Image 1 (tube, one colour):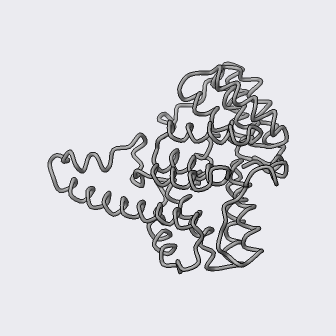
Image 2: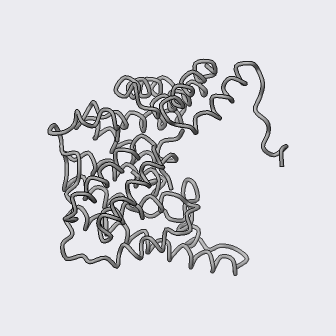
Image 3: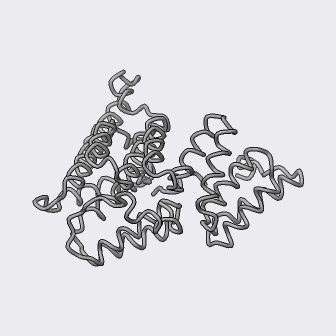
Amino acid sequence: MKNLNKLVTLSALLLIGTASLSAYAGEKERHLPISTKSEAAKLSYHDALDRIANADINGYNTKIEAALKADPQCFIAHAHRSLAAASNTKNEKTGTLISATLLLPQDNLTPAEKIIRKMLVQIQTNLKNSDKSSIKSSGDAGETSASASVNKTDKGNKNSTALKPLCDELVTTYPNNIEAFETAIAVCRFIDDNPDNAVAYTERLIKIEPNYAPAYNTLGYYWMEKGNMEKAGEAFSNYMRLSPNEANSHDSMGDYLMKSGRFDEAANHYDKAVSLGMESSRERSEKARNMAKGIEPADPEMEK
């Protein structure tokens, strides 16, 4: 399943492997400094990050809600949820979530949280500009070049805005922090729709922590989308090597093998992902086995 499309609902964010995370403790800075005084909120938020890195969307949502229950004013939990919403072009709650987050007290925010808050302000501004442009263009026979430039992105993401300078600020302020790079990767990939910027941050993260498994998942999809199957295979193999018991590593390898026409092998990896708890891989396993038998998938247009 696609890497933070798996996020998304950061996806957003955006821009972190459960089984292997304990190995990172003490080696590099795993988490950004945050302002909540609630240890329960902090632990739940950190757990949410661990889950979303390997595409456990339900687990992520559950842990974010747990953080907010422990501390209803936990800025970083609100902010991360807002970024995740912004990564999903179909999420109609993005503006509401961002507005609520920006109303939270700012006095005690950490430098990291202040940078992330600036990201939310810029996304909110872009949303408003996009809405105005949409209204104007719907009333005109032809869209102006200015409004076209506001709306045009790689995937038509109305939430997209130029956030890279703020991503740069975050990773410059925290140059050895895994979460800082995770945020930059997710924001560039899923909100700015700029996979090239996302992969540049990913490569920097790997230099900081070569054994950080989810980074290779990002690389794998990037190279697969670029058509470089050799580099994609190498990246997904590294993800599998570092997280052999992680459902998402098998699901991603299944995607790679499907793209390579190795359907039986793909089905086996999808089955393994299901056995490890990723139920969404079951349908892809069935598709892979049908493809192995020469049964083409039904045309969605024909089924309408």
